[in-house]
Image (cartoon, rainbow, N blue to C red; front, side, top):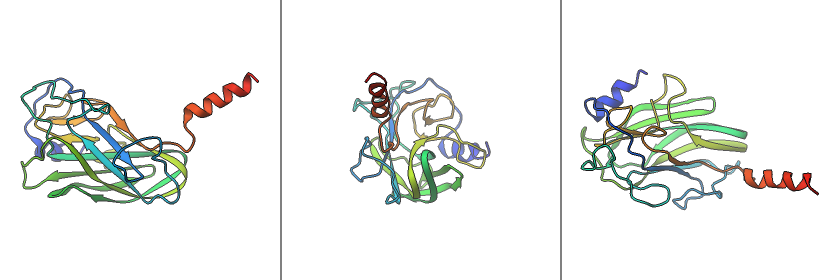
Length: 209
């Protein structure tokens, strides 16, 4: 993909390693800094915050750099790809960066149900320490009750390459980048109005009345 050289050039020279199996990226709709079943999209929602925990898993346990424990899960770049689905639509109108000293390296791109963006710390080569960070906010217009989720890889070459972050920790598929579903798996998007579990259980009860 055409943005690969840009992202990887910002990060470092190529080096491959085993997956780190940590980190947690999530969305927050109700401004409580967490992701749960209460984060639901409605027509009143105009902003969706995206957070990254570079050194903790979803359950709160500490994540470490598996290929090289001497390396920190710090952050040099971040890239996000969002996808809308479900009962309604999301129109992506922009992205507001929340990381101080980060500058845009892959422009905001919205096409159909998807959007992507990427930023890097400045000056080049500087890193923020491991921790919990609000990356930014997707500005949206919502109709119906859709849901948002993360895409691991770009839906087409005009997008940023992946959802993840550049780090001193070696990546498994992208040089020095921790990538969703390659190096870590914990993620949380928005929830439907009616949880799937409740709907399914309700139908089962109706069948056996």
